[in-house]
Image (cartoon, rainbow, N blue to C red):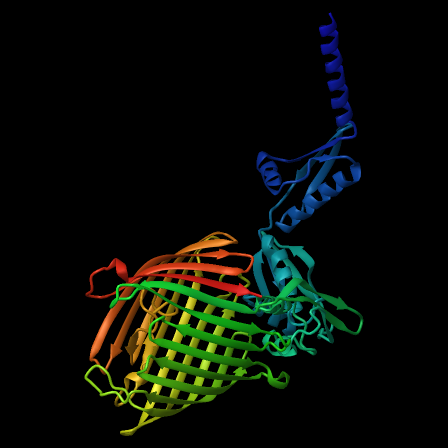
Length: 565
């Protein structure tokens, strides 16, 4: 008996709760005059349950407005209260006007905006589908806003009907005065380099206000390695001024990059270590400057040191200065040193051109006896440099450069113990990341170098091979007067902290001294891991010449750690 009473008690509680939950709940049903009209209404969609009557009526009016924008302007609607909690709206949609002809008149300003919106004007009018009229007006408003008139609006007035399924109306414009950036305020990173604001991001007082361009400018700053944008820029409009607010944060981006390589010495068959160190100091003086120190050793007989300093936007102008010192020594055979100085000009956020001078000296350390395979002599070079660089950055921890194209040319002479010769050098580098989706991408990089001369010396040839050119080969072990390398990677990004990739590298080179023309190929795997210190990379690759058999002992294993501090 107690169990039965308990069950009835639970049922009572449930029914009471259900009734209370339904109390005050209003249900709306909207129907058309035909099943076709009802289906159209349902396809647009509307809210069906309410707690109050006012939003219920607003929903009906909103739906009528949506239908009128589709071309149903003769709607007849009746509302019925079916019960205290149920309402029905029955709509007769009437004739459907599929098209609307909008007359522009002779207003040249309106016609200019319509042409920017890729709309065809015929007999001072445009003919479009009625359903797209709202989108056309919004697009025109956006075009005008990006021309400096953010408060300008367009309207279709004096709408009439003809005997067909077409509406007619006049296009009118309510235009405000042009808006210009009167003040630019940087919040957060107060000492941001002014040259990057003015010449890189192109943010200047007096610029015509453009909302789209404003977001693009903020994105350019966010893509810089030493700046982070905390949020989108904001605009304050007053009666007589326009103030832009940017919210930036300084990001430390000094980098120590190095790797340790393991390989087998072909002569001794013993384990051999090689490696390099890159130290890059960026924006420590809040000037946007860069200081690079690179040291490389193959663990056997080659040592290289490069020091480069870049000073952008001298005196807040688009001009910058770059200087470089390079030292190289090959065991006791020869050494060389070169000095470069260049001025570069920032064309826009992505492109620069440069002009400079280079001096190079090389010394034969043991007064070698020249052979058919090696010609080493003392020489000096003087060259004029010219270059063009295009770089598109992206805000990505692992891969900050989306696209890059570098073209450099040198023309000058080489003076050796024998003769003085005119020489021309070309160097082109192209790289791009093809983003297939969020986790898959393909990376391609080509570097081509050509030295044109009547004769060649071994100690002036290009040196390549290793992790920065073609992986799977000894560092700087191959000499050439013409070389082209293609690095390819298929990358799979597991998450924001780790990725893996394939390695397929190809190369073709020519050496006039040894009368050598050869193709190289290497295969391997690699991975990158985001750590608290920076990026840890590991690469395993095996390289061989075209007609050479595969040898496991040629496999090169490289560990690389890029520390940011």
